[in-house]
Length: 308
Image 1 (cartoon, rainbow, N blue to C red):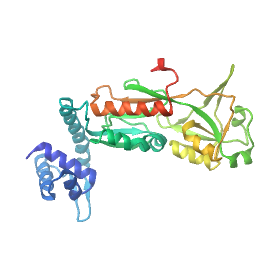
Image 2 (cartoon, rainbow, N blue to C red; image 1 turned 90 degrees about the vertical axis):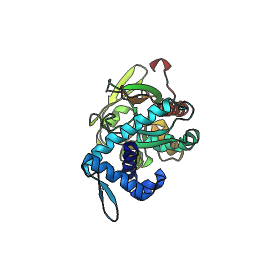
Image 3 (tube, rainbow, N blue to C red; image 1 turned 90 degrees about the horizontal axis):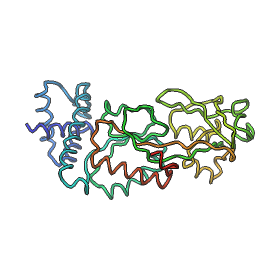
C-alpha cells in the first residue's frame, strides 16, 4: 500500500463526502480509492468511514485522523514545492479564516484574479469572527480586526479600517437624531451591540473630538458576534451601530443608512494576518498574505506605516 496515496484518497473522500467524487478529483477509479481506504483502515485497525448506500460519514476516529492527515499532506506539499518552482507557481491547499464582511465584500469578489494568478492554490476559507485555534484546527492563517491579544502568534499588519457611527432612517424617525454621542447611553436610544468572541463581552466605543474624549456603552435590543448580522440589525432599525466605512458606503449612497457625528472621530481598527510561530511560511501562504495586503491597500490602507 502506498501510504501517501492512501492518506490522500481518505482525505479527499472526507472532503467530498463520496468515493465517486473523490475518485474523479484524484483521476482514479472508484475501486482504487475504495481499496486504498480499506487498506489504510486495515493498517490502522480502526474504522475511518461509515458507508451507506447513500452517503459516507467520517467516524470519530476518522475525524481525528483526518486533522492529522491534512497537516501532514500540507507539510509534504510545502517541502516539495519549496525545492521546485514554488516561488513562481505556488500550489497546494491553504486553510484560512476571515471575518464574514471582509470575505463577502472584499476578498471573495477579488478571488477570480487571485485564482488566475495562482491556479494551483486551493483555498479552504472559514468565514467567522470567532476565536480560532490555529494549531488545533490546522489553520494556516487568520485575518482579524483589532489589536491581537495572543502575543504568541506571528502577525503582519495589513490595513486600517476607518470607522463611523450609523443608523437607519427608520430608527432616527422613531428615536430622534442624536446630537452628542453621550445621548446614545440614554433612553430612547439603543445601539447594536457587538460581542467580541475572544472575550464574549460588549466593549464601550471610544470617540474623540478636539480635546474631548468619551466612551459609549448603550442599551441594546440585540447583540451579535458577526459583522454581517450587525449590519442587518442596523438596517432593520434596531439601533445605532459602529461600522467600518467600507461596509456602510453603499447603504449610505442608497439612503439606507445615515452617518452620525461627523465632527467626532474613532481610532481606525488595525487589521492583521496572524499565523502560528512554528508554521513554515510556505510559498502559497506568502502570496496569499501579499494578496491581502494589496487588497487592503486599495480599500483600507495603513494610516501609520511606522505601526507595522
